[in-house]
Length: 495
Image 1: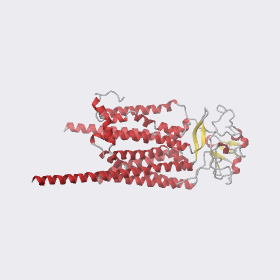
Image 2: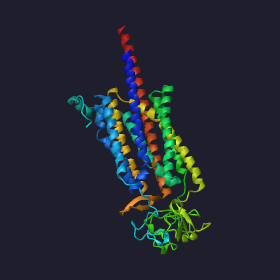
Image 3: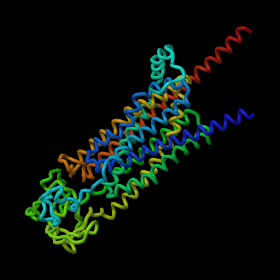
Image 4: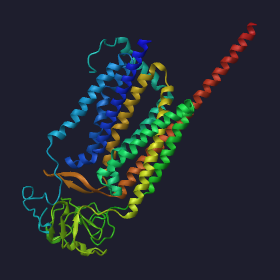
């Protein structure tokens, strides 16, 4: 009895430790996702490059995951898990090192364009030119030779292959969406980067966690079998797809930035050329087209810099600085109370804030419903394979999904996002930096449609998997009945 109690205590301690390890991994991964926008701006790099950086974690997995999943089933699992946790801790420490060696981040503002950086700069805006470790026992040659045949047996299972395809498609859409979701909220709905990250943290992530718990509870409460799990998984996929599809119609207009999204008179005019930033009102100011230091005029229009707004004087300091006598403000068709402007972009229209609230509600509900299908889908995967192949199956699933679902999406989503950039920043050493302003209409349409396509394909794959499961169970049932009839016939003959 005492031995049994000790084993139970050890198991509980192991479970708590493993749960904490998963929490730490998820915490680090979520923080990395939330830092994408800040990394771009701090190091002046495009979204496509941050996508490669974000996929670095998955690239490291490729080196060992297949062999660990296969040999891990035959070796001391807790020790391997412990070694893996130590390696993850080391990797997290290395990821954090650059932030300790880098100097403090300097924001690009009109106040920072001094003579040390640009000899032509001036405080008056319009006058300036701005091995897994050692094992107790090495695997023998027979285990190594059995690896390839085991892979063949595994991928001959049509249900397993379909579930892998389903997970792959779903992860492509999810990773591409969540990686750049803070940027999407910032550019489309005018939210600050910090507020976007905060809302995702307190609303979306708890919804996902609650969804996984709810899915497991429903499975246990109603004692669902593999067919019931398949039905629940496809219902969740279709529900999430429907909610995300509705978001396509939640449009917010581009921010009104003179020379980029509207003309200096205020007429809609999207331009990818930097020359449209110049107008008659600022032609004599010798403005630099490289600087991005937006100011908001009282007519609700944003200008790329005080110089490009034609501002002649300034008063105050820091964030309270006010620019006066801005000649370009008088050119706008919308009348302004005065010709002054303040630092920062103008806020979006009031209806955009209402649409953002609807978007967040649909996003949270969609994340919850999608997560509800996670546990049933996992159960279908486990019950569709032979017991001796389960460890290898989970390893191969993780390998394939992370290789094709974790690495490419941030890269190609980032490349697509870069194509919508209207205003690029400039590095201090020259060359193109991070994007400062996107064409929000193209940005939001591209990301939403791409995500919805992945979710639609995911729903189709889940449906096919469910049909395969139903057909497999029906065939098994028929074979069982024929076997019983044959046994009855044999018994009658013997009598």
